[in-house]
Image (cartoon, rainbow, N blue to C red; front, side, top):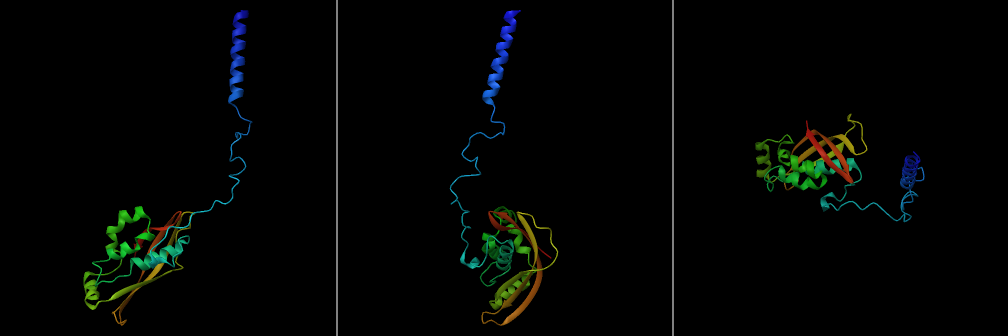
Amino acid sequence: MTRTRNTAAAALLAGALLLAGCGSGGDGHDNHPLDEGGPADSSLTTPPPPPLPGAFAGVDQNDPESVMVGAAQALFSYAPAEDANQLAAAQRAAPLFDERYYSENSGSFIALAPITGKQWQSWADEGAIVTASASVTSDEHPADQPARVSRVLAVTQTATTPEGKPLSSTTFAAYMSATKLGVWRVSAVAVR
């Protein structure tokens, strides 16, 4: 019996020592270099936003509304005498879109704006330039989330001859969302 008791006591002692050795100081934090709230070097900064083509020089990539306005203006501006169709404008706007959204939806961008084939051909025959202006409206929209913002934009397309003579103008609503991917990028577009 003594031998069994000694073996049991030794096993119990070994188990207690093992548990004590594996434990920590009680707070769950051992001595790690980041224990004091991060590295001592406070010179770490956020990397600068990626460069954009010159056409987007005025776009603030840290402002979702600025990104949506810039994207809408590029997406709905055309040179019908040079562009085969609206997809050329979508390609120019691509730097302001979430890459995944763009790759999954770019083919449908040809049908976003309310433009008929006849209208496109008429603009092409006249050598028209179609310039879009966009602004964020005060319309209701879903509540902002930390990484997703939605807005309704008023988009006005103005077609002019190469000499600047107005040919036509149309205004429509574009419903856009932007997602924060380090910087803001358009992640949804619908026109109504």
